[in-house]
Figure 1 (cartoon, rainbow, N blue to C red):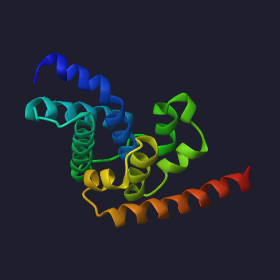
Figure 2 (figure 1 turned 90 degrees about the vertical axis):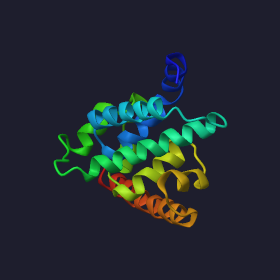
Figure 3 (figure 1 turned 180 degrees about the vertical axis):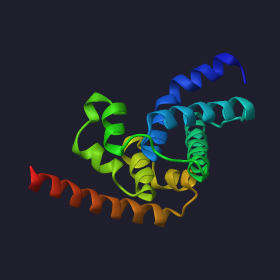
Figure 4 (figure 1 turned 30 degrees about the vertical axis):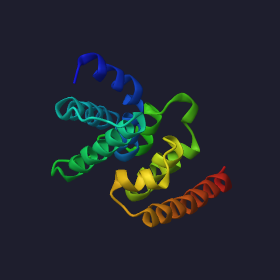
Length: 159
């Protein structure tokens, strides 16, 4: 893969890969490492893509695999509580109750919610990236919405 093409792909898809890695890990440093590893794998593999959407799906799939590898490491631990990480790394417009609630979802629900709402992917695309059935993705999205509704209602009652 040529340097210019790699730079273009990083520019076009780097933020999406980072956001997914951050949503999965809750750590800015881990998200940066995963983003870097994802693009290193892109350069090494130099796959041929049908179109830009295929490229984006491939990158997000690789990023998911990188986060899975990170979670399997025996020394894996978080340096910051999730709330501190959310405030440190979240874009200014997204700080607040909703982002905090999403980051507090159990891990299996965070990725589908992030991919669906933040990356605007379809259930079919999410299923391919996560290696799940479409029905499982729909179920996880539905359960996550219920959990988010309950968390946000609790916050509202305590405010």
